[in-house]
Length: 390
Image (tube, rainbow, N blue to C red):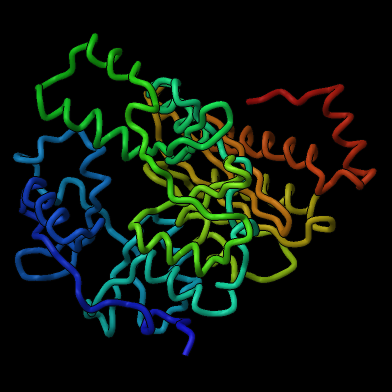
């Protein structure tokens, strides 16, 4: 039987911590059990939320003095009968890759992104070629580029992995985890506080000094089921897709979850999904955003027909006149390609509008609309009279 619901793939085995435990105890358990997420319970054994390894290593808290409850998050819950598509959608919107499974208000297990993906590729979808799902034309990092430049690239485009190249040929891969665990975290343990000169020195380290090598790769024509098997074999979250020794794309777990999340959406239309972290969006702001999106969808519905816009929005940087700086990243998947854009600003509506405007410019430049005179004329008008970015 091909897995299709949570009951087919969930696990009754999971590790938990108490809300009053320290982060140090939590880190020890995470390392011992080789799991990225732990369930958090109260003193009576009642479920409270989850805590992830990446939240701890990215925080600046003292693990020996900070309690688990400080960093734990509530997570969407799923039932045994929920579809894998629904679980993928919840994982994307929450940014949490392990969700608690409940049956009649009782916690009975967990479901992870790995098991959802593995369950999905057992069926017909597993025979899809990697090139149909991968992120094409990934951002590349030259081996001599600094960690500071890599961090700027990651922040600007909302990515966490980048292939490292020498004269265009693949020599490694660098991730945000490599930077945090290999550079910043050891220095935080060595000293209390931050020495200004030390930060500059750290950021000047080259990408080749921290990159992972050799790189695990696949070809564009590799089947998804084989690519996922390779991810599982090497316990990695991304694969570089190569053509003639050069990076042609990158395949991450998010690239696999996004099309899964689309499977139960209504066909022949353009849809939107949000993943929001730390950003408060009220009903008025949400209304403006949806008006912007619906206007975008109406313009391209006839030509593109089917597409999914993924909106990733989080707080970033400092406040200005009481408003928190916001980073917004958009990913628009169509039948033929994927498009990306990002923006940073101090208002939810303005930041989203700027990112959507940049995305639309990419779409209008693409081959997908190249043979549509209506859109070509519209693009030419925009070149002559560019819109003002908010």
